[in-house]
Length: 284
Image (cartoon, rainbow, N blue to C red; front, side, top):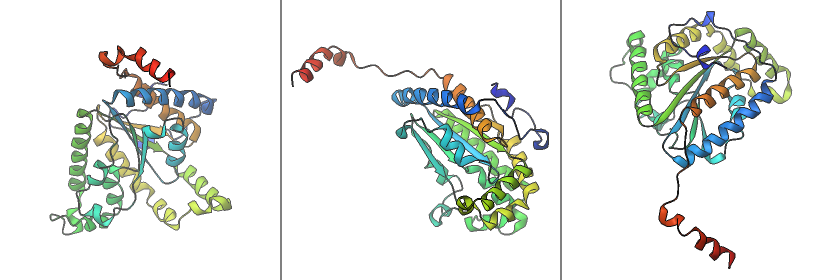
């Protein structure tokens, strides 16, 4: 796959981008790719110079949870960390809007996955501006203060944040799972029709669905303003889950392969004593 086909490199309109792509034998191909990801991550961990941050955004039911499970199931448990960001806690609201994301960043050698991300701060809060008042920002007194300039300024801060991350050795990849409204309807109905899936359904899903067009506008704006060469966005067709997982995994693998991670070598004084160490163990 050519990752450039999915990368946001110029101004895009979501209505012009496909939501469905089907690759034959996607699950079989994914198994091979995730094994390669696991092997490279082991070396990245041993080298200890870089980390990778994978950001996942998408409308409800776009398949983020299952994608994380299927793409990273072969990665050593020590090497991948997943953070699912919910409504900010009281403590988190006492800090700036990026604080809780900063402290969740992956350490060198690890892959971090943000399931919903710092972009919620220019997405959900833009669709529901009243949420901003809980942050107690001195300059925000009325809804009139929460205009386009406010959110665009936040996007600029996010761009700065991600630039700092990449400068410090974090590889940043961002994925928008592009789901069609019809497919979301199908998946919500499935949750209602299958008793063992009922627990996933919330009446709030239907309320948010009514705001579909507003969410699409906000997504389009943030994709165009925050896709940078150091931290690009990729728009992944999400109506077919198997293909979406394969596309994302392939892009992750291609990016990891660029770095040629190498395992560290032992110090010479340790190498010179290897035979002695073997003898000690064999003579126990």
